[in-house]
Amino acid sequence: MTRRWALVTAAAAVLLLPSRLLAGGLSTNLGEVLIQNLGIGDSYCLKKLANVTLSVVNRGEDSVFVKATPEVPDTAELRQNAEPIPDAAWIKLEADSMVLAPGQMGVSDVCINVPPDSTLRGRKFQVMIWSRTIPRPGDFIACGLKSRVLFTVAAEADSSAAEPPGEKTSGAASDNSKTRDAEKQAERKR
Amino acid sequence: MKRTHRLVALLGLFLLLTVAFAGAASAANPSNISVTVMIQNLSVSATGPIDFGVVTAGSATVSTGSSTVTNDGNVAETYSVNLTNPASWTAVQALPGNEEYCLSAMLNSAQPAGGGFTYADHALSTVSTQCSAAKFAGDQNGVSVPVSAARNLWFKFEAPSATAVTAQQTIVVTVTASAA
Image (cartoon, rainbow over all chains, first blue to last red; front, side, top):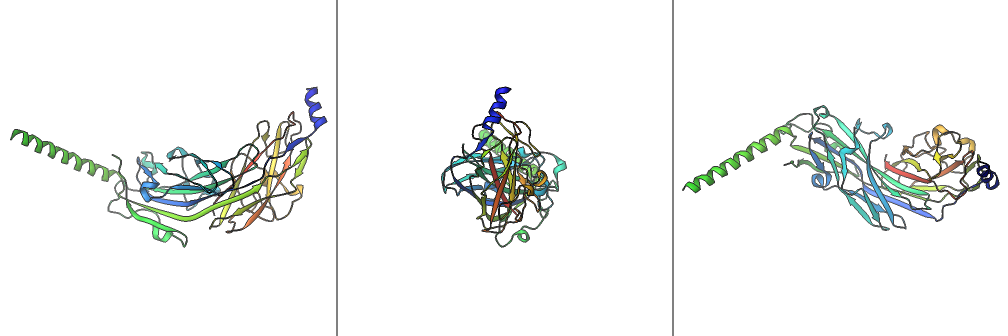
């Protein structure tokens, strides 16, 4: 104890001296995606569904280790009257970590597994995909991106003759957005 | 002939099963799925490091330099901030005790006074917390930051009241951007 206080009073100091400069940056083209009319008990991957992937580019000057995880959004992050996804484990990433050289792009498919629970019908959920750099020793600042994934679960068991529920996709698209395959045929599990 | 009948029967059975399976699938699942993708370039960059130099136990220090956080994407962004603890210390959002520390962050155009930081609005934790009009705000905030805009992120470090650690410690701060 005496030695401990001696350390504290004699040195009485703590150094916070990161060893090197950093100018890091990350970018992605997946800011937000909305998928409507998913069926309960089914799995959907964005690449197959709409040729969309989570693409992350290292815009820094050094190689970085990037980790991506699905996260339950907090209240402030919710959009479009969505509920937070009940369990982030519904979302699977094809690649949840990657090492990227400066300027290099890493790609991961994003898959949604909707549990076979009829109480999910007609509801809209949101999950955040958090991609961020894992700092090396001496780094002080890390960068991250949160991609917003929203999806609705079909209200009816068989909606083959009905309009998909929720917003019209064409109306949801803005100037810097694009609706892809507004009416795509669902992939069926065998 | 007998063999032909058997083949026809098998084929018929196969077709029957296929139709039955397809019927069951369409009855259980929606047939149309729509996907809307916002084509955005979400991008953030940040500079560092922030050097607090030598600080005494129980003291509070405001950084003399800031980290510049830039929205270099093509849509407005809202930031979230969190930290990662060093090996020997634990972050708290209150006056720190032994082997505890408090790191606070504020978006401000110039170096803020130490008294401008509050635990409620500026103390960082390991949980990624979204900026608001008050959260991590000074005369700037991290809400709907316009394209190409830069923000200055300042830090206040409150050292442990007592510690056995005298070696250099690094606390990692992660700045995360999401579409506003």
